[in-house]
Amino acid sequence: MIDVARIRMLWPDHLGIARGKYLPTAFALEGTGHAAAVFSLGYDRSFEPTPGSGVLDGFPDMHATFEPDDVRPGWDDDRTGVVVCDLHMGHDPFRYAARYALRKAVSEWAELGYTVKVGIELEAYVLERDGEGGWKPWDTPGAYVYGTGRAVDPVGLMDQIFDRALGSGIVVESLNAEFDQGQFELTLRYDDAMKAADDAFLFRLLAREAAIEHGLQMTFLGKPFAHCEGSGVHVNFSLLDANGVNGLADEGASDGLSDLARGCLAGLCHHHQAMTALCAPTVNAYRRLQPMTFSGRRANWGYDHRMTGTRVPPPRGQSTRLESRLPDGSCNIHTAVATVLQAARLGVVNRLECPEPESNDGIETWNTEVTSALNLSAALDDLEANGPLCQAVSQELVDNFVAIKRTEWQRYVAAIPDWEQAEGMTDWERDQYIPYH
Image (cartoon, rainbow, N blue to C red; front, side):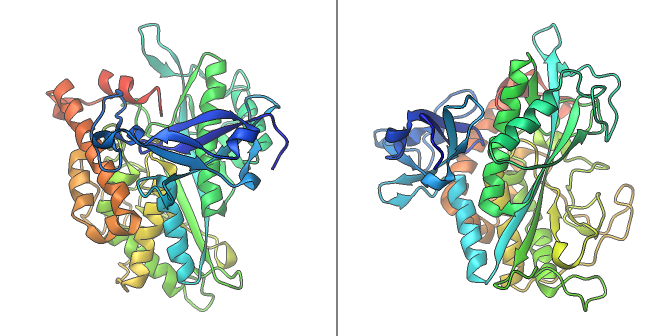
């Protein structure tokens, strides 16, 4: 463990928000308690007596702990380390927690003989105040897709984020301006699944905190502006066998993909609709999941095809990987990765038939009519209807998630009675989500 005076103990809650405490190092090593009722909270701080929250049982504590070797340098100052914690209730893992779900997915792949490697690509907008109480895209008129330098980043914010990430052991593989003004793509280096998810979780937090120092805001929300492209989270994964060989590759196959890879693709297509709510967990997310977008809304796959739900990038052999394009920028990273891995695993263990790859443009024509739901409420219906995926991810986590999100949807409909006619992000969405995502 690094030598620091205090530790910032963090963990991802059911909304993907980073909760935690600062503790002196000596106290932090003993762990610390948090009320499980956090898992009853909506974005508006309202309580819902959800499964696991203990709201009707006296608001009991859960316990946050960590492995000392997982503490890394923080970005607050030189005396503060940071760590991502596991949650327990008594002597048992807290099964409502996202990190528990990801540990479960990794363990169940290990039972099949595979170590999971994950790489995460993030997209986000940098925002500035619009003078009317809201936010607008950062004014960078020289910005362009794949842009770098001061034309796209006039104050050096990306440089600061890059340096802080590196200082905290997070390797940024690439960083560049994305399609629209103020939008950026931030790709993190692949690693073991839990480390990769922890890195992405911390990276989003440190990036947003860096933006705040400049009087800006950084949002990973899926569709903050109707006239601009959406922001997603692309989950790339590969599977290494006991000898470190990539199980997704088969040099003897005409396309270089193994039967294992095809099983994974089958599972991702078969469970696509049920995956959506966990991967796109806000009302706003469904503004991104629209036709003729790069959002991964269809239950299909393709070779190097960005208009599919799952893309198979060109590298083969040891570099073979599958890329789920479904997750939304506001997802709980650990939950989304667990969901992708479990959908893929179910395809393998249940020997599901892999559909043919997308052979159309994916813009005007496509090979499947199966898509993600049109709104959060319908997506929750799809999730609850798929018992195998719910159980694979964590039935407890899903039960809590659905209860919270049903209430979130009800609040939205009450605030925006004509929600079906709302074309852009509403003030309700801005107020609920921008402060946290």
